Image (cartoon, rainbow, N blue to C red; front, side, top):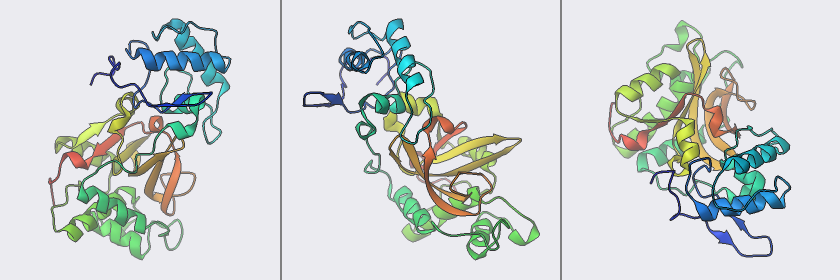
Length: 285
C-alpha cells in the first residue's frame, strides 16, 4: 500500500473521554492521504496547545508547523529532544498520544531461523571480554573464529562476527543453511548482503511503514572512516529499538566490552540501514 493513500487503514480508536489512537504504522506528513487519522492528529495538536489549526483531514502547511511546534516542546520516553521535521512518526505519535500507543513488534511473525538466531543471541547477553577492552575472551574468540578471523593475530572488533555466529548456531540447530554473510566487517557485510539479494531497508522506509520493522532485522550503523557497528533488533518499545549487540556497552559504543541488550537507539539512529534475512532463506554456508 502506498503511504500516500491510507484512508482504508485508519488506526484503532480507544473509547473514552479523551480518546486516543494507536499508531497507524506509517508516518504522517505532507502528501499522505489519511483523512480520519490526520483529523485525529489535528484535534490532538489543538488539545495540547500546538494550534490552533483547522481540523480538515489534510496534512497542510499549518499542520506541519503545529507538529514542529509540538516537537520543539517535547522529549521522548528517554528524555531526548525530538527531531523537528514536521513529520508524525513513532516518536512524535508517542508525544501526542502516549508511548503505549506505539505497539511492540515482539509478536510479529518471523521465520524459524531468525527466531532461533534471536534466541541464541539473547543467550549470550552478559558475555564479556577477558580481559576487558582486549577484544578477546573464550566466547569472543569463538565469535571471531566463526567469521574466519584468527583472534591471536591482532585486536579485532567483533560485533559483526557475533551476528554471524548467532545465525550460524541457529542454522546448525535447525539443520539448515546459514544465509548470513561470513565476515567480521560491518560495512563489508552490508555490501555483500546487497549483492547476495538480502533485502536492505533504510530508516526512512521503516518510518514510513512500521510494518517493515520486525524482530531479527540486522541494524547497520556507519560510524565513518570505513568503520561501523551492527547488531540484532529484538523489539521496538517505548519509542526505542530493543537490540542485542556484541562488542558494545550500555552507552552503545562500537568498541565496547561485551554482549548487551540495549534500548537506547531510535530508528533514525540507524544511518546505514537494516538487513532482513527473512527475505533470503538460504544464501551461503
